Image (cartoon, rainbow, N blue to C red):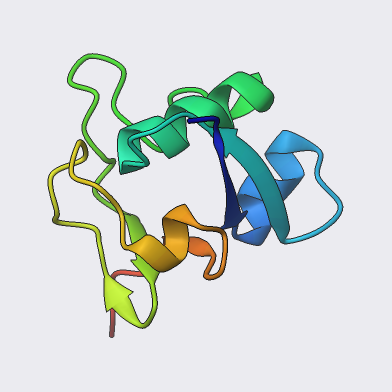
Length: 104
C-alpha cells in the first residue's frame, strides 16, 4: 500500500514561515495516517516548520496548536492514533490552527 495523499490547511503565520502561497497543501503520508505521520511529512517537506508544532524534547503538540477535521477537535487524541478515514483519504483536510488565549 502506497502513501496516502493528505490535505493540510495551515494558518497564515505558519504559511509565511514555510514560504507557502496557499492555505492548503497536499502531503504524501505513509500508512498508518496519524497526527505524527502527517507532522513528520509536513516537517520533511517544509523544514522551517520543524519544532513549531511539536515540542522537540517531548514530541508532543505545543499548547496553543490545535488540530481539527470534519468539525471535530483532534488535538487530544493520541498522536499515534489513526486519523479519521476522510482525512486519511484526502477527502477532508486536517486543519492546523493556532489557538487564541487571553482576554480583558
